[in-house]
Length: 105
Image 1 (tube, helix red, strand yellow):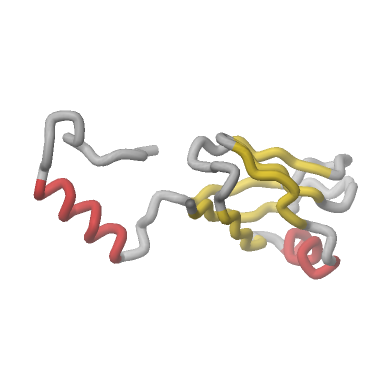
Image 2 (image 1 turned 120 degrees about the vertical axis):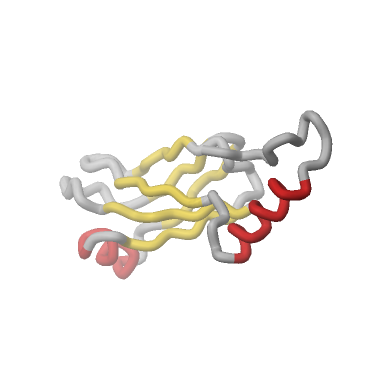
């Protein structure tokens, strides 16, 4: 995962910066991931170095059981910290509650 601007240590690289801005303009923000809720537990911690205490965490269900978890109203972001976030959810034996997520900020 690239998290910085190539060549930043040496100074400005106009072509590299233009490439990054062009990818961002196409929606390639490098701030997404996937995760699956832990079966048999009421919480799942996701480690992601891009996360801070002030990050916005957006979730998109990737399976029918993940969508049902959202519809049930039991899933929410309980904590955000430097390097991780924790989701609270229903304690279920289902192992296919998978989500795509986005970290902003």
